[in-house]
Length: 80
Image (cartoon, rainbow, N blue to C red):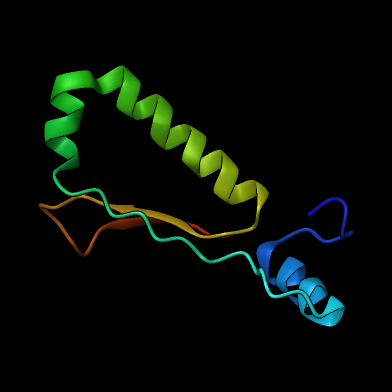
């Protein structure tokens, strides 16, 4: 992204499209089922991985969301 002078995936894909290249970056969706079970087994490792994913999503100006299975109405979103 830095080499193209853009700050997010949308801008990168637009720059690639102008150049006529075919390889755009995709938007990625990661779904983690039963996060509570993972947290019970390896809380520190899981927390570190989720924090790293959130940091990378923020750097690329992507949305990062996670939900608690018990109260689906309470989702936590991070939009940049």
